[in-house]
Image (cartoon, rainbow, N blue to C red; front, side):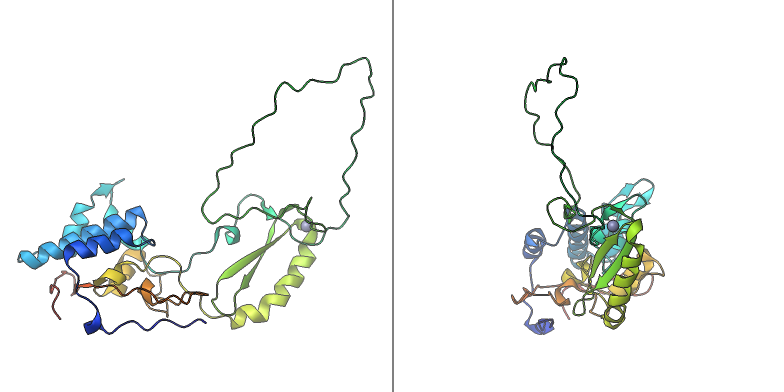
Length: 274
Ligand SMILES: [Zn+2]
């Protein structure tokens, strides 16, 4: 069920060395290449601050990550790590035609038989070679639309109306798409899911939240600074380790944390103790 695995108490967490922390970051399947760079830069800076006085870890990490297109990469990477729920690709709004309409087909589809040529004096075209199967590149999380030719009774036209359905347990969104001719059908479906959507919980975050898994700091303040005023911390907590994993019974691994305390405008470190 949807229950967060209780995190081990802070004192029970194994204290990790710098090398173990780096290994844990590399082995974490949730960490993408840019987030990995951010985590490693912060780990390096925290380790440096333990050995040298007057070093502000987040400032060191910011300097190490450099600048891209006139903006410090650190700022963008921190904003990208803000915990949030991101809509799946299928549910995102389109400026062009959406996926295939999933309403029932208005007229049944009947494949038409091949018509023989009406000009017998012209020879039949010869197929020189069989064309290779096409290679289609798609973004992550893409599921192909339903094929109305094989799945009987589906409209399959390019769609314009999007109806979002929220999962009553996770708050995660599934999109249903309908074409212009099926506007009334779309309204009916929207009415059907209205009560369920209103009762659905806040969606469990599915992006970001990795910095708090490895480092202790006032991350809410840091994220709010780089993400802007529209970002709100999820009620499930900032740390991705604490989020309930739907349908997953495997206990989440406990992770050692290097402790870092962010105070005021200037960022300080307390080292690993306390
Ligand atoms: Zn349709």
